[in-house]
Structure formats: structure tokens, C-alpha cells
Length: 588
Image (cartoon, rainbow, N blue to C red):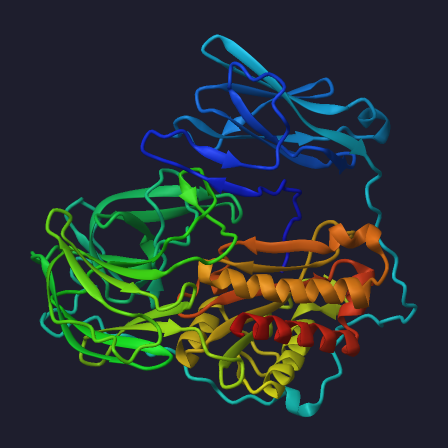
């Protein structure tokens, strides 16, 4: 997996107070040198930071939303851009500062200096002092073994490639129990007129916020299962900078947008307001499941709260922990409900309360958790009778007896990142580490599946379908990293949903310990470089809703020294043991 490594200044915490109250941001920032007028609240980073020639450093300033903010570094001037254009009171501004080309030019940079002007008044504040350091050079291999040209496959026992097919998610019907239509074909190829509905035609259609020109995902929107229908209010597009292509959307009356390729237009059949009826409910130690009758397949959302996110650009992103103590399921275009959800046998939730908002045409089911943070994902599907089946998952009581799904990244015609003169393929290293991780977890009593049992090609949708079929307690995609900078080293773990963050953090911390204590013992000068962190990112496989799901980047294929370490069987078993410890910490 290739990614560019960018230096981002970390934020200690961000708290946003709305409804006209000034936004309060808590950063590690500089001290105010002038107390009046209060235009700037903080500058980050503070203290002393190191930077290399041509490196990019992000400066963050919290100031009055109406202010004009300038960042001065040496003789350079940079205008800071406001993160949230609609913010009131105090808000965040950022400026990306590129360092000069040589160390000599950097000697006179000194301290970051920020000036903010608002309503005819100005205030200045110092940020960090910049200490120039030479750019890290490519590390030379400490191992003299020569790998011949061609593909290198880790030496694993024959049974490492045995594979028994795991179940996949069945294709869902588009027909509801009370309705007599099956409709993606009704006017499906017609041009958009503003009067149609649409129906989801893929297993799960990702939903995104209604922000003009923006195609990014956010973790508090729920993907819609096949057959879900909604009224189309507009069509729009956004440019995806990573893939360098336009993405085309339909905007929906339930307050989201979906890719046009995930749905089909259909003539509006004149559907009225939806109503719900509870058909059955059952609870066990691990799950709460209930079946609902619907007049038609309306859009829905899961909310878990209270949960603090980092907020910027009118969106919410990463979290520092998972803090939810309730789950709420909202049904749109719905005005009535009959029946109760029985939670008496559940170890997941303590009760279930319906509420109806006639004005919003929304029915909500609130499910308080018996213990904060015990929510482990949710599943939605339609059964063979067309009833909506909702399952709320609980955290397993221990690693022993739990079900884990490992996903060795890439495979088949997708080699992944290449290492040591293209002699090592990431897909092979991923598989070896996943295999040893399977053994380590099984020794602790877990039932472990792998998405592939050898060098086979799987699409991202294949991997997610396997996960939804297996219904594991945890999903871990195992990768090795790549970078355009061959000096990059270290490990990281990625998550998307807040309830996946603890798993990513625990696995990352265990892997980082192996890097420091076993791979690079005593080399304290590079410990910061090893720590890529626990990172929010909407990879396709981390957007699985059914259970905590993470993507691990064990180490860098593109650094020769580190690649030699990655293909060592002893080290691969150390990585596997670390991943197993991270899983055990999460479930303990």
C-alpha cells in the first residue's frame, strides 16, 4: 500500500461549542504575549521543533473567525486559511510552510511569528522555534544477504496455504413484504428530472454529507443496504484529488448523497409515509436482533453517542477514544411504529425506547448501552421474507471463544508495494504475517478466518462481503507500507469508525514496542520516526460497519533495512505476537 508521509502537527484536543457560543480549541500552543485585544487564542506547534530542507510544516492558529491571519517564518509570509468557513467566535486557521532548500538558508528562520487582525486591531503571538536538521538519508541495509532478482515468497509450511471457503453475504432481494413492486428497472435509464426516486443496487452504498464540491467520507453516516429507496432532490459532482477524477452524486431528501453508480433512478410510484412494525426480537449475551416490517425500504442512520470528534471543514473526523453509552437508529420518511423491542436477555443494551417526530417524518429507536464503549458494530439486511433484520453486536467477554477475521492485503495480480529492488512483494509479506498472527490468536483460543488462503485476487468488495458473511467480532487488514521517500520507517494502524479506534490503538502500541525493543533496540534517535501513529482514514475495509475494523501497516517495504526485517521469519512471528496482544488487550 503506497502512501505519502506528510508531517502534520498533532492536536491535543478540540472542543467545539455551537449555538453562538465561541468555539474553544485546546491545543499545545504558544503563550499570549499581548492580552488585549484577544484575537489569537493559541499557536501550534510551540516550543522547539526540528525541520529539514524542503520539508512542509503545518502551523495551526486558533483566532477569531473574522480575523485575517498571517504566519511569518524568516522572510516568508503565509496567509492562514480558515478550516470552517461558517464558524463563529474562535476557530482554527492553518498554513503549510515549506522550508528553504538548504540548511544554510534555514539558519535564519528563528521563531514562527503570527499576526492576526480583526476590526482594525492586531495581535501577535510566537509559535515554535525551528531548529534546522539535515534530511534523513536512506538507511543502508545492515544485512548482507543478497536476494536474487525475481519474486521472493516467505518460507511458510505447506499448510499455511490451505483454505476453506468462508461464507459471504447473500444477495438481498429488492422486494418488500407489503409492496408488490421490484423496481430498479422502472425508468432506471431516464435522465434526472427532479421528480424521481432512486434504489440502491449494490450490497451497501456509502453515504456522504451534503457539502458542495466535497467527496469525502465521514464516520457518522451509515451506508445503505441494497434495495433502500429515497427521493432524489438534486445531482452534483466533486473532484477526487487522490484518484484525479470526478465523482458524481445524487442528493437525497434524507440529507445525504450517494454515488450515482451505486443506485438507479426510478419513477416515483407515489409512496406514502412509511410505518414500522416489530415482528420479533431476541437477545443473547453477544447480540440483540430484531425484525421489522416496513411499508417500503426507507433510508436509516445509526448514531452512537455521546462521542467527541475532531471537527474541521464542516465535518467530524478522528477520535481519541470511544465514549458512546447509547445507540440510536433513525428511520426517515416514517411516521409510525407498532410493537416493542425486547431487550430483557441482552448484555448489550438495557432498554429500547421508540420516539416519533411527526414534523421531521422520522422514527427513532434509542438503545442505552449497559456499559460505555461495549458497542461492537451493527448489521442491517433484509431476509427472504423482505423483513429488515437489525443486529446490534456486543464486545466479546474474552479473546478465547471470539471470532477474528484476518485480511492479508493485496494478492494475486495485485502485488502491493515492492521492496529491495522489486525482489520482495508486499502481498507475500502480508500473507506470512497474517498466517503467523492466525497461529498466535488460535493459541489464545480464538477462532480465526483468513480472507484468502494463498496468492489469490480479491477485490475490496470481496473482502467486505467475506466479513459480512463470517460475522466476526473483529476484522484486521494486514499490510506493509510504501513511500516515495525510501528513508521512511515505522509502523501505524488505521481506523474509521470510533468503535474501531481502541483496537487500532492497542495493536499499534504493541507493534511499536516490537520496533523499539527488537528491530531497532537502543536507537532512540529514530524512535519518533518509527511512530507513524493511530490514524483516522476511510480505507474501504475500515468502513465496515458490522464490527471494529482496522488496517495495519506493519512496516515499510520501501526502506531496504526495514524490508530485510519484514521478511525475517523470526520478526514476522514477533509482529504476529504483537498483533495478538493488541487484540487481547482490546477484548480484555
